[in-house]
Amino acid sequence: MQDKICLIIDSNSIVHRAYHAIPGLKRKDGTLVNAIYGFFSILMRVTDELAPNALVASFDLPDPTFRHKKFSGYKATRPSTPSDLIIQFNEVKRGLRNLKVPIFEKKGFEADDIVGTIAKQIKSKKGWKSIILTGDRDLLQLIDNKTSVYLLRAGIKDSILYDTLKFKEDYIGLIPQQLVELNALKGDVSDNIPGVQGIGPKTATSLVLQFKNIDNVYKNINSLKVKDKLIKGRDSAFLSRELIKIKDDVSLKFDLKDSLWSGYNNIESFFEEMEFSALLKRIKKENQRLF
Image 1 (cartoon, rainbow, N blue to C red):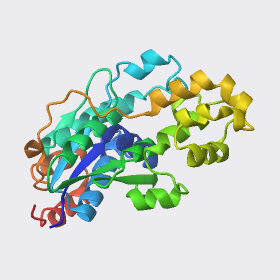
Image 2 (image 1 turned 120 degrees about the vertical axis):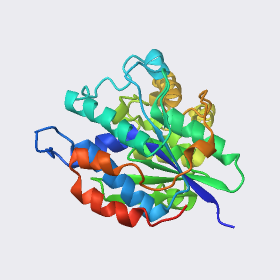
Image 3 (image 1 turned 135 degrees about the vertical axis):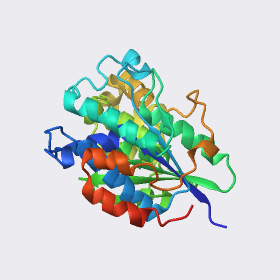
């Protein structure tokens, strides 16, 4: 029997993607609604394609996380969230509540950590698997035989479903968990994670393929041409790995039965208020699905 699907939404990632992909969309009164429209347009497309049996949404909070405490430069190069986007986050949450989709956010942690924790809990549920909806490649580290990632690559329509085989194909033989080791060496500009200065993607990939993880890289450091760079960047490499690794043990009151999905009921009035006529037309088709 085929496993049931719980779709875990990395909501901050999707809202940001929608905000930049559909610039300038406003209601008649001039209120910007581009991120809201894009989020629910993506969600409707993905639920239509995947037919999930449960939905759950994770969000970031504005407070600093444990990563900021470990490294003050974490995400320091990112611009602040525009005020018109902050307002739209609240409206996305209101729409999700109308759909009775549970929303999780936790002070001191990122949405990624919530996603990782819920995915781990679902792995213990017989007959269930997770698909994570995100635009963030960092979440590919969570892929295993019970967890896949539906990754938005550009805009709101270009996407790919990653499982273990697709990951290995695209990452030249690495397994998903080694993405943490790879990025610990090469760094991650988008999150301002330093990695090891002078170690680029090609060298980092070669080292991880050969030694599996950065612990083994440093155990064999004397045999490597990049020895000096690795010695100089040792502390940065291990710190970067701590920052990159997604937690899966956040304290959450998650219950799968509270996340069961029954379609786009109770959302019409919200879409009417937002003036999303195109999405209203799609609801009838979506609601024909039985879960």
